[in-house]
Image (cartoon, rainbow, N blue to C red; front, top):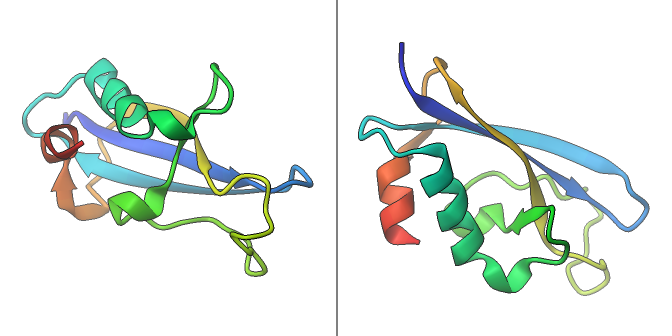
Length: 107
């Protein structure tokens, strides 16, 4: 059994339309779920809009974005994505240039 993390996130436009994405991050060093969440929250603290939603910009982590094709960063209300859920998974990593420990360390 592995302890990789699957990070599910979404982009929500001003009309409440949503597009979802996920990445799987290798976790060979045993970083905890709390450490990962806190690192993301700390790194993107200036983007937090609502206290119960963890906002971030996946492009700053070299992760895929889910903006709609007509997305205009100068026109949209929010240019952030929401983390929907982070869970442990046995799935293989899809982000091969980054581990959970590297992500936590670099934030």
